[in-house]
Image 1 (cartoon, helix red, strand yellow):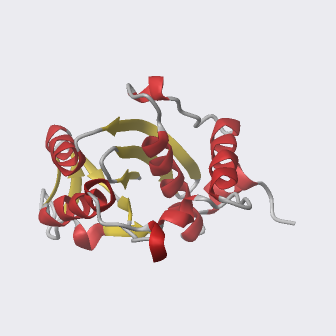
Image 2: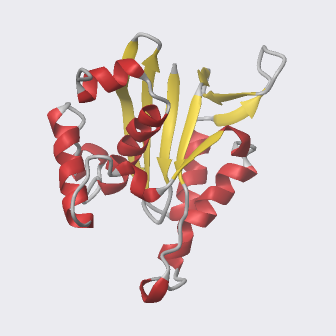
Length: 184
């Protein structure tokens, strides 16, 4: 099975991943690009991500000629209190969501809250990010800016983490056993 995980924003991260009934999570490709919603739209056009009936009776998601089985997207969540102000950067994830919805993908989206990607724990955001990156490196999924042609790979990393977090929520046993080990 093939899935896409997207972390939309001013800089957008995308992870193309696979899994199956007897196979764990595997990264098939990662991208990170700028330009916000227009950049996401251009990427979706370039890779021909769409909904169509194809050869089947019911609508399906497609990435080029390949059927997509899952779409995981980080959901925009405004921060409450004095730390949130409506700026272009803070509202761009909403525009990215609009691009996806406008393409007819809304019914296929598995939304993920920003904090769900930090399943490794930690006492504060910096520690959570550090532990998450160490987890990815340990399992061969670590990224740098060089891997995605950017100054950093923060958004591509988030897309990878959201894909894994979604498979955890689905209790996908091959992924759980491969990445987290045997149950006690």
